[in-house]
Amino acid sequence: MALHLSTIISRNTAHITAHITAHLAALQPTLAHNPLLYTISTPLSTPGPTLSALVSALQTLSPHSAGCLAAALPSSSRRASWQHYTAVSLASFDRGDATLFRSTIPGRKAAQVGRWHAARKSTQSDPVAPAHSENEEVDWEVALSNAYDGQDLPPELARLSAEDVHTVLYFSDNAPEGLTSSLSKFGSANKLGLIGASTPFVTGRPYTLFHNDRIYSDGAVGLCLTSSRRPTTYSSFPGLEALTRPMVVTSSEGNMVNALDNANPSGLLLHAIRNHPSFAGREPGISPELRLYMGTLKQKQGGHELDQLSYITSGDPSRGSLALDTDAAPVEGTLVQMYLLSPSAPPDLVGEAQKHHTTNSSQRLAFVSTSLDEMEPPALSDDPAVDDTIVLENTFLAASENGSIVSRSSGGVSERSWKCSIPGATMGLEWLS
Image (tube, rainbow, N blue to C red; front, side, top):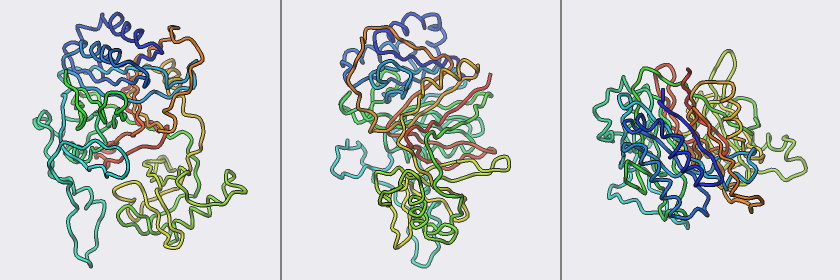
């Protein structure tokens, strides 16, 4: 359980800095001696000196800290557009239970395809999956996950007992594969990572990570928790509509699903689109404009619950296969369902947190995926000098257009890490009081 959790949101960055300086003064003796986790999201128009002052104010709270720049928190309850608000989230943990770390373990390099990418400062080549003979049956999930095996833990974590670690929280660049592989050594821990917001137009760095008094453009920072109070996990996927009935994967390979219930997956998806009310009178097809997902289901209380989601990147009706935005498609025998994400307004993340806070005394820490299409702020129409600061106690909220990395523990075993980038999706931890 955290010593302190809070999220502060305001149109005026100075109001947030004042809150940190004044309202947290009483907590300073506690915060100063314990590890601090934090995120900052500011509008693109925020002057560099203003952002630097905010970072300095946070780093004075504790000399032992890890943080990152994040995206704006979606909210429909704010008077002005939520993209114009600055937000700071803070989480302080007992130093006897929390171990900070900094990781430089390399992951997958970004393909240089017509977009700006920062070159990773690593001389190590990408791992490759083991070779197999033509006639050998390949377990692609194992093969691809093993491609990054053998990575050592960050030095700060090497001394920790795998049995004691129950939670890992971290902020990363967009290549976390090496770190997630090394963290699999904590086989029963919940692991929740936020891929930092893209910041080339904010700080000149692809990502902006903080570790103590240092700033980094790549790698990862975070902490491990070993206290006896283990949190529970929760998730939500607002705006999802089921397109099909649940079906069983009967053939898959790599990131391709080749058969569902021994039928053509692309054909099944096209049939579902044709019969969906949203597409009445339109030419059906699997186009990039559609936000289509395949979700795995798990049994719960006599029914089924959505577990993991992967974006459907393409489909070929003639060949039948569906390609997913993941290293490994669901294995044969997995129960899945296809979904459409409706083009609705962004979720009211702040409003939902306020409602929860008024009816619950538990602590919540959550990472939210946002849409890049929603990051451009509309013009302002009211006075930014008005003090409309909101403080969410016992709540840590952070968002990114790049998504989060998730590995939840169930029955003492952690699932294989997967990337959640569904706009509006929330992946969180809760400590019950």
